[in-house]
Length: 227
Ligand code: C5P
Image 1 (cartoon, rainbow, N blue to C red):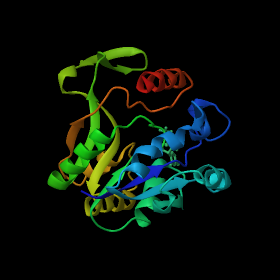
Image 2 (cartoon, rainbow, N blue to C red):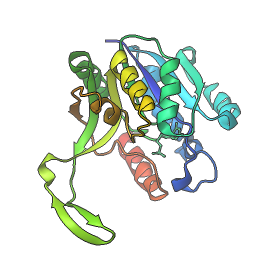
Image 3 (spheres, protein in one colour):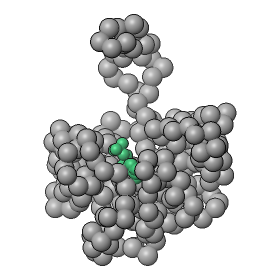
Image 4 (cartoon, rainbow, N blue to C red):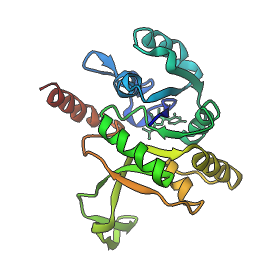
């Protein structure tokens, strides 16, 4: 089943502290963003890769994309102030039908198997997200004082990709914009439209590279995958 993907890559990466877009940092010999895109550019079922970037990064992106196979299916789009704005700009550049995925540029270890499961689930249900069961005990606190231990068995740690029927995602984004709601993922926007969101169990190594220590984990995951 065909799909297209929006990859938001227009962040500043402040929490990584690299002084530039963290997606340009290298994992092995190549920038993080190229690792993230590999699985999509190589997948014949992926008909379009919409890469959302900042104006300032455009030249560097163009340079690194020169050596990418299947580059004709990559389209560059400018991002916005918030991740949600960046994804919305990506949506406007997408084909207005079928299944659309949103996958953070900062998650370079996504597997094709999970993508296929998400696409199948979105075809059936309209909305599906990758997630893993929470491993740690989670507590709610006010300041540094615990107020509640949250029941763990129903908690999931949510990742990307998140997959949707195009109309489901577009409606959710438009409603959120009209109501000035800012979410941290697409599913939170879709949930507000009362549409069901299904979970596809993913892998713990589909990590998001956010802070400097994540790079150590990333190098270790890369090494393991080489073997
Ligand atoms: O900062 P964080 O890692 O949570 O961002 C998730 C993804 O969203 C990153 O790939 C980042 O480049 C992207 N992003 C974006 N536009 C923004 C902010 C973040 O495309 N305004």
